[in-house]
Length: 115
Image (cartoon, rainbow, N blue to C red; front, side, top):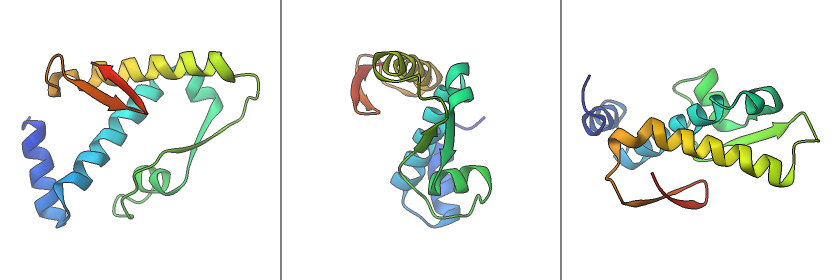
């Protein structure tokens, strides 16, 4: 498999869009994967909006930078939801760790982390 940097470059060239857009799309994909590993989030979150359309139905749909969700369970709020989301962030870090520079802080979902 090609290194991530090369895959991003090649995708940007073939789609004629800036590499930064492709990088953000990859980041969103890894964040979604981190969320998907949390079974409780799979049960209560409904993925919606432009990014959902692109990722689930229309690969050539406009690029979007945000993740929109609705919750179908009102009992999961506050600290409990925060803790589960933190676990999803840790999983995201695990998934992308091979691409990161050790010891470098990264901003993921509004939190600075050392993945």
